[in-house]
Image (cartoon, rainbow, N blue to C red; front, side):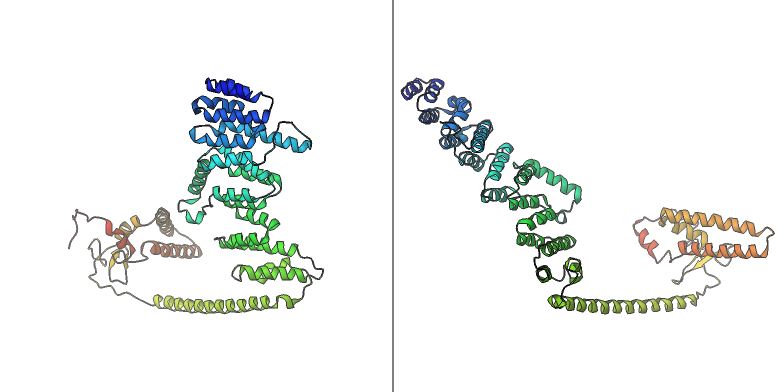
Length: 464
């Protein structure tokens, strides 16, 4: 068979040469001869026969076939077309182990062949998601977690927290979706595969962190490595999240106490308190996790620290209350002073906007502490554009109510009803004054807000 394969190869008939090598008496040696023929042939001629005989070649000479396939990858031998052959080879290996008997006289069991090829094509630049996912499943089936964890550490990017993203949650989700689509590793598939095995939890923790699911990562880490859970909680940037995580760790520490008198539980919880720091958890946060009967000596230092902290906070609050009282007293004095403050208006005072004599006008006027005097209509005309819609509607409503009450006063009514109307008119007038005359229109915020407006060219009727 070897001579026939050699003659066929020399004649340029690769198909006949490979068939002659594979169907000889020594099947393992024939597989090596077939690989030698394919390796010596040009890739454009040998490529179809690689795909056609890949399953047989892997079954008889797995490592040699994997090395041959890998050597021709850079020349264009497709890893995705060879992947079904590797999958079938791994299924045969699994079936052989399950049957615990000699599966096939020519079948060679090599646990490293498929992994070597898949690692090789990835190192040479393959971005096939199918290759990445299948290699992940092979790693997950191994007893040693090391290769899987190293693989994930290389290909799972760190999660980008929302605090570092100024575009908001929607932009963050879009960015994560784009990263997931561009990554050759399907993290969701990898996580499901690992969790299905019931082991390799450190790798699952790595994937949870890749998703930004720190709480789930800590929950899982507590089952396999509490020190890893503490490290993950310590790296959290969100103070509220950090507190939740440390409470989980403290609850887990209390749940795994062994002593009957509770001393071991208290010691574990106090250790968590010291590890996270007093700025995250205090003794009152973990009291629900302690046994109903526990000696105070074991955590008296923490209680003393909490009491000292409370004392400091109480003193701070008392100081703030005293400052608030002083501020309130000052405001009361100022209000009392303003009630007695009067503004003197000259008999020849003119409206700041219409230049009319206010004493000779039939309408009310407003005198401001700044010295300006403004007629009511002119003041409304100047201030209303600077009020919001709700305030303008309120001014309109008050004016209508005042007009209605004034009309009603002209009718014959009982003294009690007139007094009630007078009180209501006073209340409405005070509210109207607060809306339109809260500050001087020429020295207050109205003037500041109108600084960007142009000058009015129409000076008709104005006297300077």
